Each structure stands twice: as C-alpha cells, then as structure tokens.
Image 1 (tube, rainbow, N blue to C red):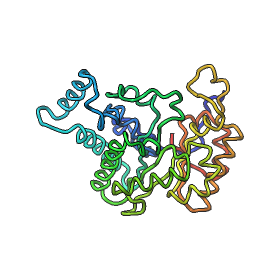
Image 2 (tube, helix red, strand yellow):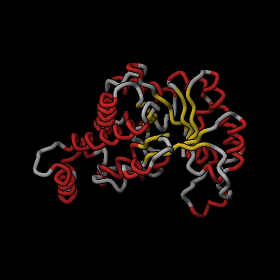
Image 3 (cartoon, rainbow, N blue to C red):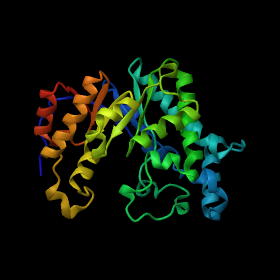
Length: 301
C-alpha cells in the first residue's frame, strides 16, 4: 500500500457534477464523465427511453415529477429534458475551458454504476458487470441505441453552441478492433463523423489489449486517454472495491508500467494526443517519477 506524497505533476480536474464548475478556477477540466453528470443531474436510466411502458407506477411518477420541477406545467418530452440538461452542462464547461479542448467521455459504465438511476429496474442482473455490457458493446446493443443517440444529440448541440472544435469525445471500454470500427461508424450514423468540423475521437485505454495492440488501435482514434485504475484492475485481476484485497493494490506494478510505456510510445510515434487519467496519482510516487522521466507533465485526476 502506498502513501500520499508531494505531487510532482501538474493536474487537471475530472468533472463529475455541476457543482464543480463554480469551484474550478485555475485548474482546467481534463475529462468530463457523462456517466457522472447523468447520475448527479439527470438520474435517468438509459433503458427508460425504449422501455418506459414497463416501468412501475412509482417510477413513472418520479420521472414526471423531475420534469415538473424543471419546467413546471410546460409539456416536455423526457428525452428533451435529458438532452437539454446535459447540453447546458457541457456548454458551461466548454466556455469555462475557453480555447482549451474539452474531452467528454461518453456514458458507458457497467451495470452496477447504473443501479441507482430511475428506471434501473429495467436492467437485467449481470453476473460480472465489470466485464459485461459496457462501452461500445452497450452503444451497439439494440436496447441502448436510443440513449446513445441522445448522447450524440447532446454533443452536437453543445458543439454547435460553443462553435469551433473544442469539444472532443473519449470512448470507454473498446475491447477489439471490431468495436473500434463499430463506434466510429455509430458516431457517423448520428452525424458525428470523426474529423468533420474538427471532431476528435479518443480511446479510453482501460483494457490491456488496448496497450498490447496499440499500434493498430491508434489508427481508429485521434489519441489515447489512459485510465490507470481500470487498466491495473484488469491487468492484475484485482477488484479494487474489495476491502479484503486492498493490501494487494499496486498500480505501480511493473506490468502496469510496461502497458503504459506501450501506449505512450505508440501515441508519440503517431504524433497523437495521450493523456494519463489517475485519481490516486498522489499515492503513486514511483509512477509519478516514471511519467516525468517519460516527458508526461500533466495528469487528469
């Protein structure tokens, strides 16, 4: 187990909720997590948009109450409520960033992260959510395509509102080359063509295969955002949420350093963006020094 040390790197923030916007002054926004914004500001499960008729009466009433609190007696569709709130948050974040790019990670967390949302009763229980329907596999699933389309509408409206090409996308949990091609196609179908109007699409590297096959994955994307925590969990076969295993947690393990090196080398050789995302970087002095030695000066945390 490592302990907190003096932070040697510059940091940018992860945007989890609307309240952070007022508190972020000089520190820029390194990554916006749509999963977290949905959980804190919208709280609607993605299956609601295709299976609303199967919801319990109590959940139906709760959804109507949310809209009434926002719009009063005005009749507003649930989808418009969802899109309008998220668009406003992204526009506010982008304007706060100024000319700096705003990287927005698409919502595609595992089932456990969606269990508190209104309408979670619609989702089937997964035996192993960590390795279940998430990321690209979620967007491609017929039951989740409607919510993916709404995410894309949010991005399009936000980009149109701020102008230019400052809002960029980060795609989580890309398992294979097939999924890499699939997400680029799915985005294009929704009017978000990579490269059009300056749109950049990055891959969140959280699966060891992303590093081992980085020289091919890089061709599908404009850069990498490396999620050190998830990469370590899957590479070391550890559940970081399991208190009984905390003594074994080590994101500075040589295996993780090796995977990071693969990703940084490939991105550097391709002259593409690469960002490190690790919320516990202050507890990893060896990793900090390794990053500095490899000319990484900023970490998203």
